[in-house]
Length: 500
Image (cartoon, rainbow, N blue to C red; front, side):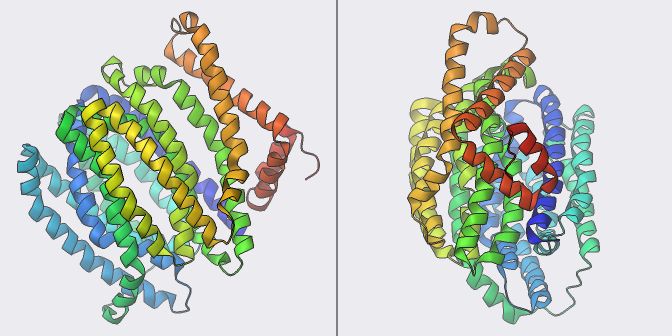
């Protein structure tokens, strides 16, 4: 089986897993959001912020290093990475638990100490799973990953529901994960048959660190940016508003998070194999990105236009303050999605230092913008700041990506503008229709509104693409033929493509 078809099969398997995970997560969160308070969600979030900030000093880059490694002694490298990972994980955990009491006092919330022990336990076993997961990804054995993870995708949410009805309160969000993650990690090692042995291979640790040091730096800055705004919101507006912001962000990334995880998992395993031919590298990269945008952007449009009925249906009127931030954050999520492979391209060509420089400038600008936004506009101000700042820096990332493959930055925009222009036109037209018919639409049950919006957006988007950009459909068809041959034929029939 070709690399493309293996990648396509892996994409489908992981996508199926992630759809199941998202459905289970949504079902669970709908119940939890009614049984718990925004403060409870904010409490767990602010505890995790501390762990994320500390863990990045030692846990970023191992998987990327193992996937990008091109020499012959692969097994020895995995053994060295295993012991390096063990040592770093224990150091990070000790530091986290030492700082947790101070964090608890700073937040004036004693439960943070108890939550820290639980979150720390989850962290240990999640980190131990990094090595076997990287092994499976490197060998394109995505089906094994899915088989192992699928039962836990079902069991962990069910455990959270059982815990909340048993009266565990805020601990319902994390205790089931602590109990089941060790079992999942053990199954990963059993599936890969990785035997690290007793030799530590300390002489290889320097080589690992040399590759990962800029990734660690980028990770520190990236997590400062990703979680710094939560810290700022928590201090300016309280943990209750932080909980609302988290729900808005989760809904804005409802589709993107899972698709990004799937695509990056596949791309990080496949793209490094083409670094010797930059033209072929770019062809595979942009063909994937076009298909990704074609599928993703209509869903983003639906989420933006139907944000109000979605929030009210799923979470109830007590979460209405999350509607406008969710709509703003959807714009950020769309931009993030189409540039999320930046790090993969940089890692493939060992240009980690350049991605570090981007984050070095971005993080302070973002945090200052978040503070200004929180002070003047609350959670809406933070969301607006996030979109404005990231839009500027994403263009920098695009330029560096295109430099790596020796293409002009304008080509990236030229290649993808049909997809963004089409969805922008659909959103504007739909908004105008909704504005004039709001009296009728507002009286409908939320589920009906969501359905009407979804059908309207999908039909309009596909009509524009077929009418104005038929060549793009041909490009997508070629990509499907190389990666998802079973999908290509029905795709061609739907869009009337008989020349492929």
